[in-house]
Image (cartoon, rainbow, N blue to C red; front, side, top):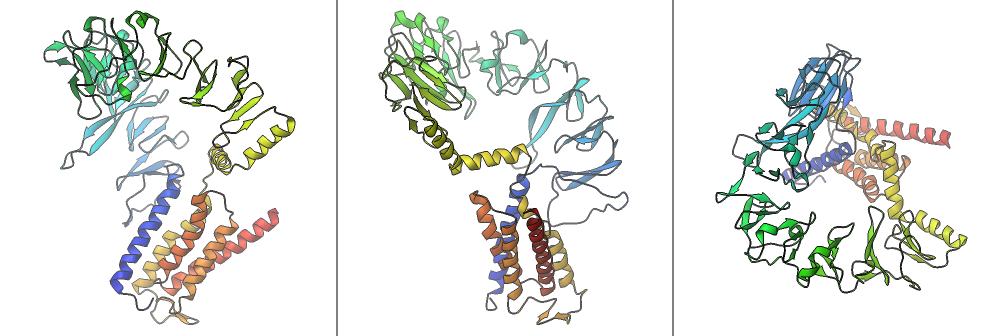
Length: 537
């Protein structure tokens, strides 16, 4: 180590500091984004730091410090009723605070509705500022400004769009869309900037036309004029693509969220295929006389014309059309007919001795698919089949579930969330000392402590010449985490080994005095933890 190139060593130190800061960010991400502390009045000072401020509130009895984007604001509050809502908003009996600025209003019914995206000034054309639109029972606001005439009691967002509505009007963010018939809005087909009331299509709150022709919305991606059918390619460039003239435009309409129909054809769902101007969307094989007999199923990409089953407009010959249906418990779903149960083209490996009949011999039980006396349990990592179930076999299922590491980890994380426990909390006693270490490092390097101060074989202002202290600190760090317990989580296991190694590498150049502090405090913590655990046992 002594023979290391100085520049190389400095670069290595920078890389390691970046890594440890990454771990710090990871630990913080697992917790609430708000850091709540107490500060005695009159003792608060703004100090320079190499780090930008975390978004946070510092709360005292009758005043609050709000910090964001490397700035801080201090404002007075009612201490008894004050509460933090998120990084930007807080509330008390006096009103709502946005980034520390009070908006006097009743806080009943406070809710953030939507964020308005505004381009930032500067060279970066992709940089945006997000302005919150929010409400109480007294009004609707954008940042701190009241939006006039919006009814706060009936206002609501429109899913998949940038639009709001109340009982009388439509709004594009905070802008009134004049003339829109709010009672006839085609909300199911709203698409970011686009919405229609059946008569007029609006883009960004403004009536939209195509080559001076009036537009009518058919579904989320398909529009028509009196002479053309258009595909809206909003995923890329917000432009319309003219499709080939094989549609009967007057009769063209939506059958559901996916499929279209006219008097001649049913058309493929455009959300699931690549579309260009030459794409032929009509579903082949569906007879014209069967168009009025189309039947859809709970998962709407399947349909029947009474003769065949189709998925995304493609015929599925392996299904029996007369008995086909969907078997679902809400999240999981399979297909079935009289001949069997399917996961699309794969037929589940039951021993089929009689026709599948939902509710009679086939049903879901707690994420288990049951056919007759056979169980397909898809919670056990790929599924397992059990025939002629007995009490012993049921017990085996329970044991297998208990030994399933993947499921055990999932349930463990669910338990963490339920009880608001941070799985990385065991690292916090180590990480919390880092600011003290940085401060001591500065003190020892500043010359405040005499350079000739020594202890045993070490000069306190210089690194340990024999590298004994860095190794001891790494070993104690490992022991400390070991005592706090491990889990089957791979991330946690890696942290237990990686962190001590990082501490050895980072600390070998630190002053011996700093390393002695670290070693002493860590040893005390280990001894304390040992006796606590021994007493608990």
